[in-house]
Every structure is written in structure tokens, then in C-alpha cells.
Image 1 (cartoon, rainbow, N blue to C red):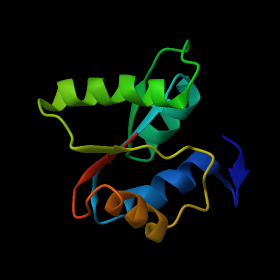
Image 2: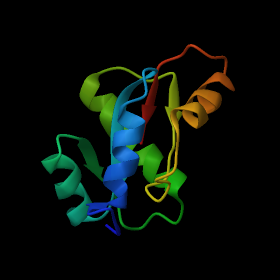
Image 3: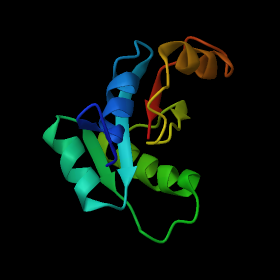
Length: 109
């Protein structure tokens, strides 16, 4: 929740990723109620995960399974972006998506 220009860093990251045209779902995976509440307050989707994960990829996997169960379908790609990457650009996201075959829709957690 570190502030950058008066808004939490996670909000900057969420907005940058949400605005990418190839990404259908943006999900913040967190074990922190303050982050969950903030993302929900700005109209985003957040999933509360276990606080026992040692790696972000485990947290992302837990959230991905929960969202897929809720929506009733699986995603072809899950692109993991850390909440402390406020300088992420659309170009960086596009390059990451195209590295896996390009043109696919993705979910971010």
C-alpha cells in the first residue's frame, strides 16, 4: 500500500494492467485484507488467498483456480505481474503475451 503520487502502488499496477487490450480479467491475489478492500473499492477483482504461501506463483495459482471455478472455465494463459511493478508498460505486457504464441487472451493475478 506504499503511496505513489497519492495512490497505493498496487492501484497503479492494477490500472496499467487493466488497460491492456489483450487482457480479459485482472485479478489481484492477496492475503492482506487492506489490499483486498482497496482493490474492491476501486472496482477491481481481488481474491483472498492463504497467508502461508512462500512464493507469489503459489498465491497466483490459488487465485487462478478460484477464479476459474467461479467463472466455470479455464484460462489459456495466466500472466503474473507483481504488485510492486508500477513501471510496467503495455509494451512489456504485450511482449510477455507474445512470447507464448501471441494473440491470446490472458488473466492476470
